[in-house]
Amino acid sequence: MNYRILLPTLALTASLSASAATAPTTLTKGVLRIGMEGTYAPFTYKDEKGQLTGFDVDIAKAVAAKLGLKAEFVLTEWSGILAGLQANKYDVIVNQVGITAERQKTIGFSAPYAYSSPQIIVKKVGTFAPKTLADLKGKRVGVGLGSNFEKQLRDASGINVVTYPGAPEYLADLAAGRLDAAYNDRLLVGYLIKSQNLPVRGAGVIGDAEPVGIAMKKANTSLKTAVDRALLQLKADGTYAKISRQWFGQDVSKP
Image 1 (cartoon, rainbow, N blue to C red):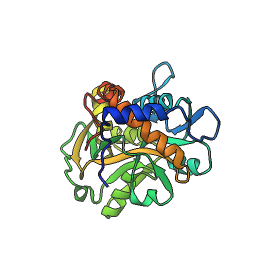
Image 2 (image 1 turned 60 degrees about the vertical axis):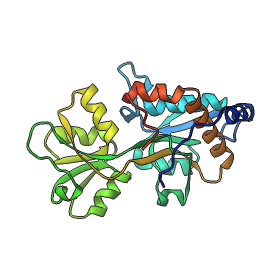
Image 3 (image 1 turned 90 degrees about the horizontal axis):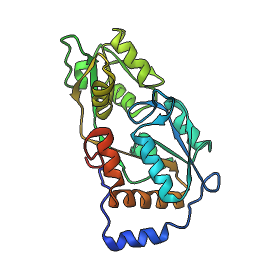
Image 4 (image 1 turned 30 degrees about the vertical axis):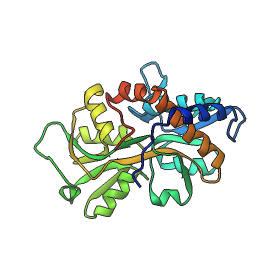
């Protein structure tokens, strides 16, 4: 399942640019409606001025621009975000949606645009330093409802899984001592430690890097083709690298 977004040749780039004039089918002509949480820093969140920002926001805007469409954001809780796609509330989801075999049965995905690994998060002060999911057995662990991370914790068995609408809620409970640990994306952990001064620290990194993609209706093949083309163009012209370095200081498009 690990496949990469490859840099196109110059000839392919020219061909893609020439074919980009035809806009894909969307719910509203000329508009790309984009579903995301808006509470999941550094991917989608509101800054101190109330403006929506983040890595996924920048990627979504850049993709929409390549498609010649106006980006329109629709904010919703993670627990209902996939159902909202199926209910035609938006054309795509750009919100670190993991590409899994189970989801691919009913949802279409772009080629991966980022990779990361799950990581255990614990309080900054303390001696608890879990390295594996087995170390979390019998512990209260906070996680986002309906996420890949929740499934991984439940599959591990023996863990007291406590679900939340989003990361801010369970990280607050972790900092307050109401949880023993939390479980989320490694990139998120690094960002929180660096930028928000939360009293948490990263512990064990679990498994291999996993791909995330732009989710869309499985039947909308024209949109998938166009989004994949746009991602290739963003890689080729350096836009993706610029966005990735701004948020993480590294290229996160590769495992």
